[in-house]
Amino acid sequence: MEGTTIKKSTSRKVFLVFDYVLMIAIALICIYPFWYVLCYSFSDTALASINSPTFLPRGFTLANYKEILTLDGFFHSLLISVLRTVIGTAASVFCCSFLGYLFTKGKMPGRKLLYRFVIVTMYINGGMIATYIVMKAYGLLNTFWVYILPGMISAYNMVLIKTYIEQLPPSLEESASLDGAGYTTCFFKIILPLSKPIIATVIVFVAVGQWNSWFDNHIYTRANESLTTLQYLLYNYLNEAQRIAEQLKSASSSTDVTQAVAAISPKGVRMTITVLASLPIFVVYPFMQKYFAKGIMVGAVKG
Amino acid sequence: MRQKTALAIKRPKDYKLLWMALPFIAVVFLFSYVPIFGWIYAFFDYVPGVSVTKCDFVGWDYFKLILTDANVLRSLKNTVIFAIISICLSPLPMLLAILMNEIRNGPVKKFVQTFTTMPNFISWVIIFSLATALFASDGLITGWLASLGVGKTGDTILASNDAVYWFQTCLGLWKSLGWNSIIYMAAISGIDQEQYEAARVDGAGYFKCALHVTLPAMMETFVVLFILNIGNFLNTGYEQYMLFKNSLTATNIEVLDLYVYRIGLQNMDYSYGVAISVVKSVVSISLVVIANLIAKKIRGKTVI
Image (cartoon, rainbow over all chains, first blue to last red; front, side):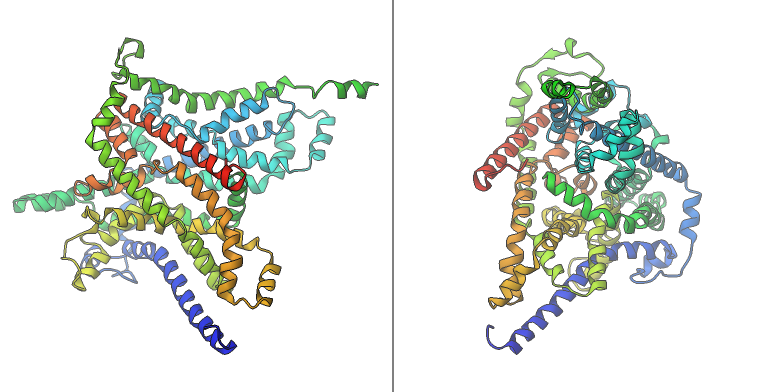
């Protein structure tokens, strides 16, 4: 190994080939499932069930997408998902950034104590059942607000923003407050525009979290169908398909089988909802990438 | 004169700031602290809809029940197995970062980074849907395996209780490996190039550079994350396990969090569910504190 330079460069070449192949393979493994589901959604369901659309759609058709448009509750669940993402993100980002701003003020009485009061929530929480009982007591079950209120203040995001504001030059704000601007004016007119990078980072992460969440839908608002989100709609379809598949296995008579097959939602429809539910992530992803490093680096400073 | 007095009075306080912060503090109190007070339900025979004061006080009965409940033991075993696997695999993101760093071709690097980090932003429901498309009895990969003669047609890994541990681990890796490596990529980009040059002058090849310059630079990050993860090891979360649980995989996939969900929200045994949560939280917090103390001993500073 440690011989001549030429020998070294051959082993280096072998390593590089291996490295490139491995890395590209990992990337393809990450992306391929999405491609397959996308191909499936554009395939003719009957053809696709015989011959899998491994690399390209089988019998290209928009039938699945047309069927989605007529699907019961699809547009409504899309609306709920969009609403919770927009309102939830706006509320959470405002609360975290304003509170973070207030915590940068040394003049706040009891600042250290209150700051710790918020930080503690990163390490300890009541747990699922106790939280459920409390939400129930507040009368939030089966209301839209259970999507928004509990996540309004994230200690972690608040710390990210506070850390960012602290490193801004204080002179900018001082000159404004000399002109008689209050804290709120200073926050909206000076601090917020200057904190754009960190605010954008937090917006992206909160919005993705809101769009992706389904568990609160499952435990708090299951009984209220008008609050079904897109993710939960997909969950229901998948669950139902799995249940029926299990029934099929244990079905004794042929009538059982035909009944079960008739009840199952077509695979193409499920694949199409999967594509549509992941689409927003793909669309905002290029914008998100810009903020990765930033979000993580600030997080690391805290860690 | 005036300035002097202003300095003498130690930093004047502005109560307006306190009033402005209070509504936010109230939200934190209502949604994060009140549930912790809900822990008292573990000491009562709580009936939904009845105020705690009217419920029977049962003392430590529910906690004693935990010790004799075979299901707790089984889900604890599952949790510990998942945790041990994830601890063993925790250097993987670091390895990926090193291998990714050796790729000097810009577009290829961009391609690999983009697609390996993306699954982290995909919800578990969608991952479950993708997994169904590939691994269900009529799934693509199931079909491939059957045609290769591995496994029978109609057999699905999703229903295999023996495969639960490694299959769920693989899904978790698929989702988060690339994302977890980003922090190490950042650590690598922070390395002073002069260190590499110095190592090269000393005759180190690429491999030795990676071993003696890149790796040590990442160890600090690794240790911090490792310690934080130890505190989290009972908190596996519910989403993944709940989605992939079915009648055939139930015994191996049920982790503590999922068991709490089943006891509390499916069997409506609130008090017992809270009792298990309380024990879990106490253990988690103790682990964080202990890990932090160890970190202080080793590194001279705390992690948190």
